[in-house]
Image (cartoon, rainbow, N blue to C red; front, side, top):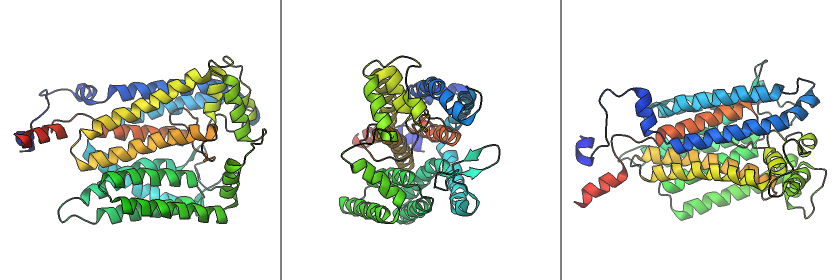
Length: 388
């Protein structure tokens, strides 16, 4: 009945699944992600040997590990992108439930690997950071609750989604992990605003977030030290921010050349949090600008497709996913150039880290699945029919 009223998109009877997927998925986004993965492999070749030397393993051990996780991430992304929105919603709700329980158990079964924050679950042969996988599942779950709240006689979706988000943030703050908390709150705030929230409510929530930041500053020495370092008029040349800033300046427009950079030997996190400094030093602003263009293309392509989508759940969940991907990229690069306080956040698809790569594959796979062209048509078809 829906198709009879609102019109349809072309369908091929008996069309193979792969053919239908390729025809309906956003190939621009897939291309940009593959290019980002390629850049990540290139930078892994540069940043891996110093890390391997410090840990007394073979020179390309971490590059090979990164390549394996990158391949797994792409496989997961493509597989998830082939699913229907209903399947994505079910998987996300189940995944969020499992992730939430794991986050709650981390203070008892987790490890901090000497970094002062209990964020990882050690499996012996590898480790998992549950918060990375909670992010995409939470975005879809919150989008589903917000959309359900818009139905006539529907549940109090906004209140439920807020409770879910605040409960998750509370568990993250206990680790502590303020960076992921900010990212989740931002993604939910975007969805909440799109769902039709009043500006008064949005401003009230923003004020609450500011008060939470003040409380964290007064209660957490780790958080206060990062804020003080960010607000300081001078940067310690021997700090991570100092080394990163110097590397970016030295790189200039075209960089020092392949393998000529020094920041990878000076920064312990050159392969993760400050990988953009390695890119800027060896390949210059040209590569950094190329990376920014790729992220911008992913964001704009997704938003363009979402604005034409008439299903509230798809619009809200998709907006939350793209907000988190874009914000994470901006935060990582913003920290490197000291536009933002240090957050300890990876650069999507480029930084090394198994949990980050796999979770980002899930996140973008969900986004691709939600933004695929579907037979029910776009919101423009519905508006056109109503105007006749």
